[in-house]
Length: 115
Image 1: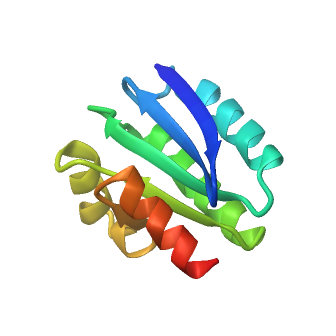
Image 2: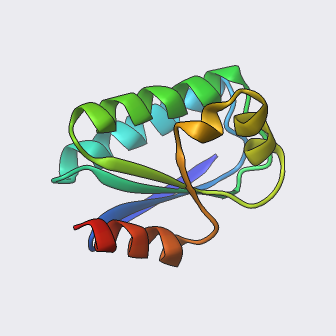
């Protein structure tokens, strides 16, 4: 898994490439914690368009991150392509809890409109 993140007002964008599974979860968790610590408020755009697979551990990282950011009064928007992760969120009803966007630009616009 490769994780890059950068600040792009009004948010921090994290771009993930590779599987989000039990092996990659600790790395992603560490990167998310660092990005959240550096952001004020913690408005994150998580680009998962190049993540072909997500297991239950990876899903747990996403849910824990959402809870942490909401507790800090920030927002998390997932950028998803059609495929496995979008389907996973739908069948688990988590699509009702996550904000989902089709592009980084759309997600940034949504965060900017709320600012």
